[in-house]
Length: 339
Ligand code: SF4
Ligand code: SF4
Image (cartoon, rainbow, N blue to C red; front, top):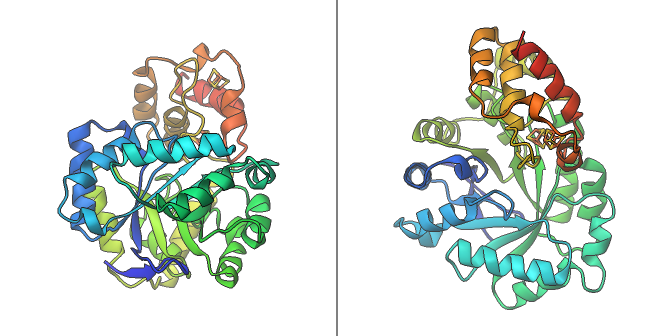
């Protein structure tokens, strides 16, 4: 495994990091096996969030029982915007992760006006700075999906940031490439989310090499089994150079995906009607793009709730960081998957 500096934090992180979303779907023994395999393979940075179900708790338990536990760099985040809410979130994260120190605590997914609220008196920044002074956290970071909000935030002297977490992959590259030099100029470490486009880019080594050929610190990959750990970590040991053919193949996959597709971040969940939104949109992707229509339709039939149960509340669209027309896409998926 290769390692890189995390900006000016003094921390050195594995180029492949552990993304904490998928682990919340796993049974505890499987979660522990996967995480232990990742730590055995040299991964030393784990990213999670308060909003990822029981991800923090599973990570806390698994790390606690691993011999490398003292070398693990823990990163988590919260969508709390007030000082009181953030202070409570930090204490909850410390308890769930079973530690008295979290290396990196990130402001999670800020939207229009949030950063002003966070930096104002009584805002979440007060709690983050207080927690840093007391040693509960090491550094403050920002994790977001909206380029227009991230760029000014990275340059804002009122926000004492050490890192930024951005989506970077062959599809999102045009939107986020400009953040890389801004981060360097500001001395911020870059953590990369969605390096495999939520699993939709299937050439793992090529996709990770594309990301890691840029001056980023770590590509955080969601993994839910030891096979995926092995595949991702192999990519983290090799050269990140890509041949022209490999670049063309990546671009071909990006062209098939377009831009308005679900990245499987799960921020839209839970749906009050019980719809597994990212799964439904993924089945539709398989139906439309990969010529596995019957398999996709069968998977859809097996779901407990389908799109006809949607109560049209719109919550999924309010929560989706990519501003996807989720209901419209679900309707289209339902048409395809029941045709
Ligand atoms: S609009 Fe439908 S799919 Fe979206 S959250 Fe509401 S019930 Fe679920
Ligand atoms: S619909 Fe949006 S919020 Fe839901 S998983 Fe997909 S990208 Fe994430």
